[in-house]
Image (cartoon, rainbow, N blue to C red; front, side):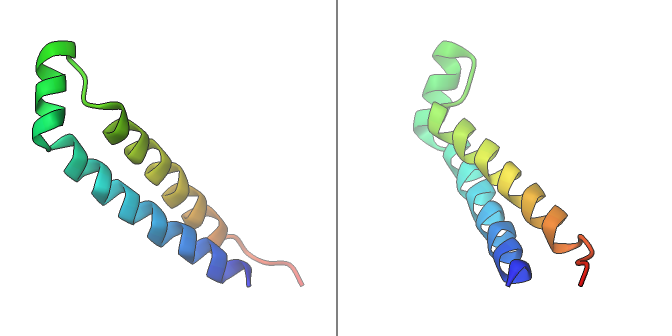
Length: 67
């Protein structure tokens, strides 16, 4: 059961990373980057949460289970 949850976290993390990259390449993010020097908060949070989920999913998926 833990493998299923960790793989789901990995997949969700990858999906959020893809959405974050798309959000950072949007017109609104380019405008925000022009005026503030940083992409939008939405893009940053999508990337951060996606990376945390993906790393956590990978770490728990490959961790050896003790029976």
